[in-house]
Image (cartoon, rainbow, N blue to C red; front, side, top):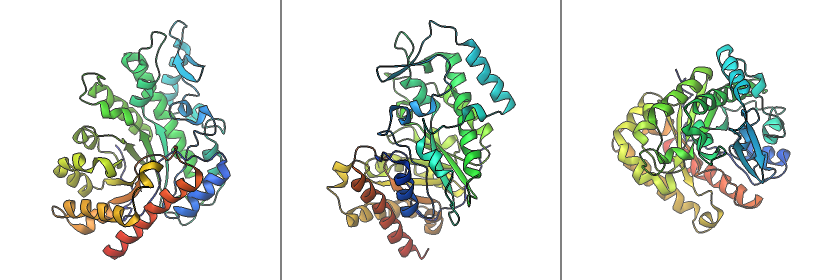
Length: 345
């Protein structure tokens, strides 16, 4: 059963990727901006192995990386690797799934920091749906459509998430942790073009939640069946509120019940795309967020809404330069301070 995280009281944090090449500089930036709720960034511009999916592929059975692409060679026998994943899952043995500096340089750097005073530390791993849909076999078919591989993937990701949680808990000053599954492919729920079996999604979620004892959230930066995601009862749901609030708020009753039972919503109100961000002002983003807040609190207690909300960029910040990424992160802090000031937090 997924554990709830502490109320985050409209503080701010980041999502995932940053354009930095130096993990020391990246961690310095995060810890300098997001003092209350830091997160461990990924640095995909530093190396291919640090990009989404690749970063969590170190023990993928049958893995091949060729010409910048990751696929599974189904012509070779991967049964030994798959069997090992099952054994590790049953035994709850996560050490083989540890993140090395080669795959996660910022994680390797953050482990040595002192995070005393933070409310919570967050990291992200690639969710099994997105992983399985982006990785293909020799016939270019997503491995997620192979029942056995889909099952292995969820258990492999579960062990990765378990290791990440344990590693974060060992960092000085960390009291609460949150592992967020990066799942943009959940936007395909209900699609006839890219079919996603909901029962397989639920099975994968249950595998992961069975090994993560603290907070476990989901990030999906496109519109999806929010009722289904809420029904999984994650600790946190993170989404693009800048472009997708209207569709999200169609599920108002479900959102309110989710927050009332302790769920947190990460409102991605600051555009992570530097081109879009450069065309808006902080005051306009504050106005946009306050309009969302006003719509929700007309149906629920304002204090509860503020307690169970957090302000973030819309997604990871990869396609920007370093100064632009700093400005985007600082904008989320500015909005948080304004909202917390209005709410007396």
